[in-house]
Image (cartoon, rainbow, N blue to C red):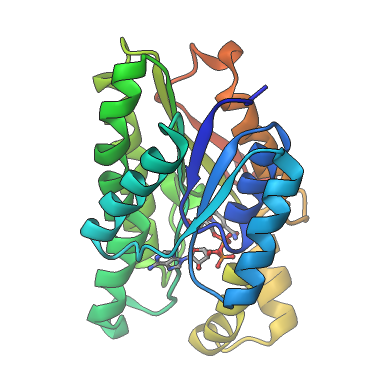
Length: 260
Ligand code: NAD
């Protein structure tokens, strides 16, 4: 149902972002992927997206800490695809430490990548969407856009910020055929989660098993990780014409975490 449409997904060389890109491609969209990683692996992922979609797939290495590179990435997609109808802000990093020990440069990086890059993406894609009278903007927030956990000050601040930013833009573009929504997953099994296990072990003095069961899955009543494919399926729904009335929403997909 996305044939003839074009999408940008930031932070899509891995995890949830790559699942979004695959889902969009499977529906026939042109997709621009972005993020860091091994060049051969990225090229393989890009080529597989073209095979899946029968449309085009581009890679742009824009660094989400750099507003100029984000604007250039959007210009790249608009020039190659002729427009960008769908933009998913997804790039994100994590760092786990108590506030008084939290490295200032980590705070700045998390606010830049997890929050400010979303603003820079939005301001670059909205003019084209307004001209065409149709657009879908999705942000990957988190259960941490609604609740907090200790030792994640920057991440929780950034994700609460994304929720507010998403609602604000939804109001601004509500009469232009553009919807703007947050998706807020609980723990999804991706490299981002796997990589925070050692730091959480250290910060809380726990074993790997204790972090998995008592910290991560402790929050999720289902006791199961969310999958990237489940998150991507929700994103596809929000891209449909039938979802035109859903805007300014923050959809939880967290195994019941924020119900508790
Ligand atoms: P991941 O580590 O698998 O993927 C992160 C992506 O962001 C990668 O493609 C990486 O290269 C990219 N990236 C990192 N820094 C970047 C930068 N400066 N510029 C451009 N790209 C950059 O992580 P993930 O779990 O798939 O996370 C994706 C999003 O989902 C993040 O915003 C994360 O906060 C959010 N999220 C994840 C979970 C979870 O449990 N995994 C839960 C809720 C929300």
